[in-house]
Amino acid sequence: MRVAVAGFAHESNTFSSQPTTLDDFEIEVGQQLLDDNADTYHEIAGYIVAAQEEGMQLLPLLSATATPAGPVTTADYETLVGRILTGLADLGPVDGVLLALHGAMVVEGIGHGDAETVRRVREQVGDQIPIVVTHDYHANVPPELIAYADVLVIYKTNPHIDQRERGIQAAKILARTIRGEICPKMHMVNPEVVFNIYFHNTSVAPMQPLMQQAIELEQRPGILAASIAAGYQYADVEWMGPAIVLVTDGDADLATREAEKIGDAMWSIREQLVLDVPDPAAAVRQAIASDDNPTTLLDFGDNIGGGSAGDSTFVLEQLLAQQADGWVVTIWDPDAAKQCQQAGIGGAVDLQVGAKTDTEHGTTQSVQGTVRTLSDGNYEEFERRHGGGRRHHQGLTVVVRVPCGEGSGSLVINSERQSPNSIHQITSVGIVPAQQKILAAKGAIAPRAAYEPVSPHLIEVDSGGACWIGRGPSSYEHARTQLYEWTLTPNAGDSK
Ligand SMILES: [Zn+2]
Image (cartoon, rainbow, N blue to C red; front, side, top):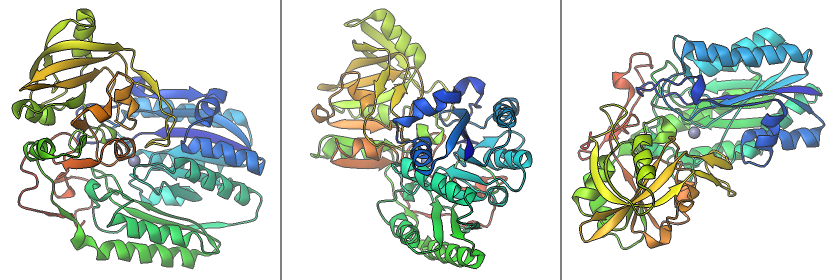
């Protein structure tokens, strides 16, 4: 069995001021694609495991992945999808195709990028070759994607720690399809509700019981995959919102019936979607008062994994203003990092830090301190963490000790935007979480896998930024307007 493999993953925030271009993508080609993923928890690692067990020969084309930011430019999308299609043509006949696509890529001038990618692959391989797709849980899935793919399998966890298993599941379905043992039938339901990112944690209600239904369904005979995408609210595209995707063996009615059941269950709990999240000032007050050290502040608004800038200062500003002690804030500011490098370890620095991307991420803070650490920003994560990655690079990274009130805080300044998916982002530069009082992580649910093991108390923060929690479709141009949003408590949203 000859199976082509490609990955093309981006979560595109249409409210980001930073378009995503070719330079932003980390690209792996040929055998390197397989070698770099084999020892990770990514779904391509799962493809490799299943291929060995099922006797499939994987033919790697290209994998392109970029940190979430604004939509992908049309020309650069064409370049990357063109390389996938050319590589596919060069392979000659294949028996199947595996595509690791995020599901929330937006391409300027095109819209839903992943559906377009699958459409083009389908056009090239014809109707007889099975195409199996894996998606991130934050996918916005349009009906076109379901029409062009044979099978879609979506992560079941957030933080995403089951990517490898979903890759195995998807690739095994492909192997059985190629052998003619099964005949996948797929149906999707798009409930008319926005599942705010605040409710995306798969370990707690309201999502946990819904996901449990999907997990139990997969134990039933005839059901090959039962998936729920929570959707990605920061993309103003027509099919923004959650999706239920059922894949059965030859039984289209069963797929429809079970997808509708979960869709109905999701709709029926919409009144539980009530947001009650403290603003940065209140969250910092709570963290200072807490004895459960360290407390982690989850900076929702500047969620880097959701495409925000990574240099917002709303939380930092409050830590400084309230003279908090023992805090650690990681912020993206390549110029400030360079300035610290020039000062050297032990050097005194007077920095203007953060809020340089645009006007939506707070005000630049004036910070004086001493450089403690200089690092190349490379580290490895061996545990199962959101994103499944192992080798991480955050560029030149410095730690500055900042006097604050009676005590001090630590500013970790890096040079490449990076979601805080691994605690080693800060331990690799000498921060010991157990010695801190307050950690700040620029993310929503994703950092939990890294921070819950070291932090007994996490506080969600309704902060500003490109991932502001209150951003919803009532102000969008392209999203379906009839979607039920959520209820805001009187206090939520103050910070914006
Ligand atoms: Zn995701």
